[in-house]
Length: 250
Image (cartoon, rainbow, N blue to C red; front, side, top):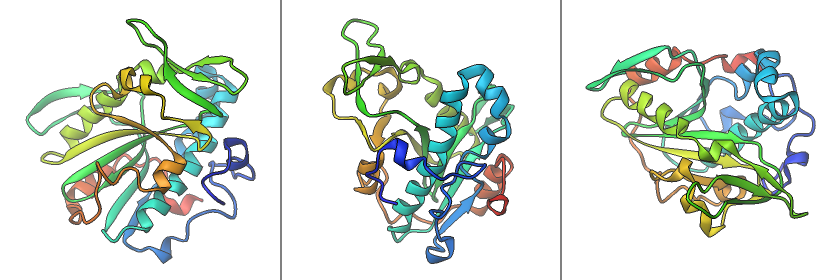
C-alpha cells in the first residue's frame, strides 16, 4: 500500500490492533530494524476508556492511523543502513527520574512511536488528521486548525499543547546522555507547508510536523541522519519495560 493514499484508504482492512491486514512489514527483510511492541495496541485495549475521553470516532481513527504510521516508520527505517530499535506504544511510566533531573510524571499519556540509536532518539506522535491544510489562526494565541478542502475549519488541540515536550523531558531522564527530537506525523493528505505552522505551540521548541509522504521522502534526514551507532542494550531494556504489547500479539 502506497503512503500517498488518503487516510480513508489507509485505514481500510484493519485488524483488532490497528495494523492493516496484508500490509504488516516483513520484519525479517530488514533485521537491522528491531521492533518492540505493536502500534496502537494500548488504544485498542482501552478503546472504551479512550472513546469516553476523546469520542468514539476520533479514538477509532487515531487507533487505525497509529498502525499505518508504525508501518510507514518501519519502511523508512528499513531503507537506511543503520541498526535501530523501533518502539511502539510505550505507556505506564509513573514517576521517572534520572540523568541529573528531578522526578516527573506525564500521567496517563503514552508515546506512540520511538526510534532509538546509540546517541539519539526520535519520538513520533501519530495524528490521524483528514485531508486539508494545517495552519495557525492569526493573533497572539495562534491556535492550530485544519482547513478542509470545502473551507471548513477543525480545531487541532494537539497543536496548542506542550505535552510532547513533557514526554521528551521524561525521555531525557530515561535515556541520559542522548539527544532527542519530537515529531508529529499526520496523514498523507494533510498539507504541512503553510508558513503559519512555525507559530504552532507544539513545534515552537524545535519540533516538527510532517506527513506520510514527507516521511517516505526522507524528510527527517536533516534532523535524524542515517549512520547512527547501535543502541546501548541497557537503554533498550529500560524502554522494554514500558512496551504495552509484544510484536507476537499481532
